[in-house]
Image 1 (cartoon, rainbow, N blue to C red):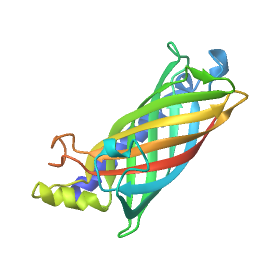
Image 2 (cartoon, rainbow, N blue to C red):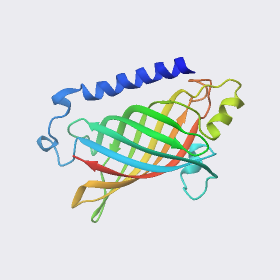
Image 3 (spheres, one colour):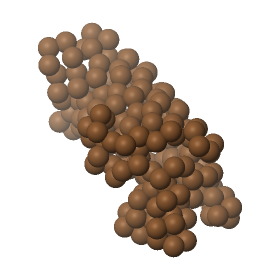
Image 4 (cartoon, rainbow, N blue to C red):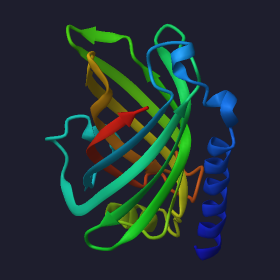
Amino acid sequence: MDCRLKTAGALLLALAGSVAAAGPGFAQSIHDTDSASLQTLFVFGGRYYSEYIENGINPFKPAYENNYIVGAGYQRFLPGSWHYWRLGLEVGLAARLGDSTSAEMWAGAVARFDGIVLGPVRISPALTLGVSAESGMVGIEAVHAQEVGGGDPALLFYMAPEVNVSWTDNPNLEVFWRLQHRSGAWNTLGNMRDGANATTVGLRWKF
């Protein structure tokens, strides 16, 4: 697993480097195109549950574990939008705490829709897809690895659907609810069908 983890870390660092190296053209001031921000920083925290991702859509339904996640991330979006849709890149790092302690790092592409405005409130669903590397298994993830006989969750696919809420007169600060999901996508990576799922809440600053 150590060799795979080093490879996974190198891959994620390369992806993170591509975000930073995108250059001034990618980071051009959003004020040249629209009223939204090109970059965001966010923090979040939540709890793992021992069921598949869809069971977390209702946050009061899952069987929660005594395992928690605290993390932070960075997003950079392309200038402009297409019918309120925006595309960008995301990198993040989290600590997984509880029965054991480990770290998770991920990188991927993010799509966001900013077209839902209800009075003074803007609701923005978003989805991040990419890859995730970890330094050690957490909770149900270890059970899933044993179920398939030698599963290795060191490097898995990453998915994070979320809903963001902000005030139209203060668009640079928003709260969000996010599902933190890693899986092998039906044994495509690590001989894993599923990995770990957590429901989280957080704050995001746009600039």
